[in-house]
Length: 97
Image 1 (tube, helix red, strand yellow):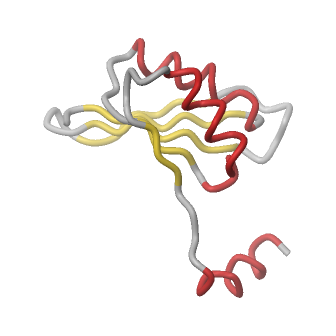
Image 2 (image 1 turned 90 degrees about the vertical axis):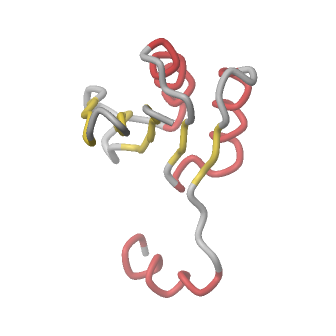
């Protein structure tokens, strides 16, 4: 795999989309920050147009956001999401209340 994408939420519904690419010629990660979970499908479509071979979503997308991106990519690339186990509940509560 040479190029993969990660979509995360910016935490500000009025913020413009942000994109950054990190890595090397052998493996590039294209990070896309979106204002809202609902912007995920558009970001996924753009990532596919840029040649990504896999997309991962931050945990804020939850089930419905993941389903919307999966439907948008229609099997063109695998889509996964970051989820936390029960052992992370205390730390997540500290961060997000």
